[in-house]
Image 1 (spheres, rainbow, N blue to C red):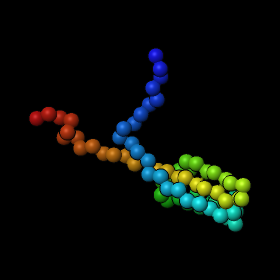
Image 2: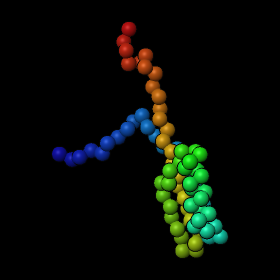
Image 3: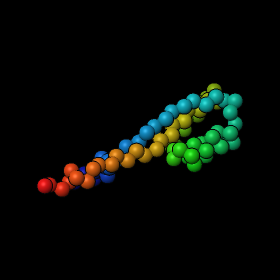
Length: 75
């Protein structure tokens, strides 16, 4: 019997992707990502570093879909 991954249909992610040039230092990028996490609720999803020194960063935050309660109770 195959194991199915847990799924959360009521949750989704808002994803932002941006590129960072090689002139930005690691500490400056760390500070930028820390501010995004503290203020906007973003978390680091993926970071790619290329041979030329540039970086591509994906950050995400959870979107929670709220369903009305009256749909679950029949009249």
